[in-house]
Image (cartoon, rainbow, N blue to C red; front, top):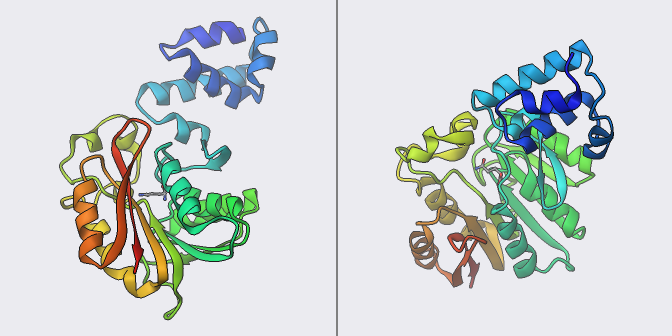
Length: 271
Ligand code: GLN
């Protein structure tokens, strides 16, 4: 059987990816793999590593092969039932903590929670908040519930469409969402990791604004006076989102850029 070093070089994979996959198979840390560089793999380890490498070479995302991705400094389980967490979404979390104020009690809901990264992170960063999360996908909710349990995040999960499954009359200090916002014919849907992600988490099968429109329309009736709506969206949807919020009666409407300088989060306050 090949040694750890030989295995790392055997497939035409970026070094970092090979290392992550081999760490997954051997259970060794990076440091341990360095000091055991010349140790021979067992037949089972070699076989398991070869299988993962082949899947990666066929395009499967590293996050799905590892079953995990880091978000806001914590590790979240991910499966092909959920979108892979993106660093841009940390801006949505930051903006929510800043606008609502993390040191005061508040009720916040995350619509289309997927793996639960937004809801769990908010619950852990703002322990006084009561956080709810909604998803249409039962499989996604199972992933999100597992993440909340593992991380010790107190989140109330609901199965259904946007605000519909929440108790009538319940009003929030903030509604946040990273909804499917990719236009149905966008070429990104056929490229890279995105090809393996759940289509319903990516696109509205229309112009990309359907879900954003639905959430903005329903939000005012479910926000407390002074409550905030915060939405993640595509780089070219800032103006459209601001218009939707202004039309729905929100004030303090603004769009925040991500680290790449692209429009990414639009927010507004209920007057
Ligand atoms: N809320 C999850 C995330 O931000 C899922 C988003 C989605 O599936 N569109 O990753």
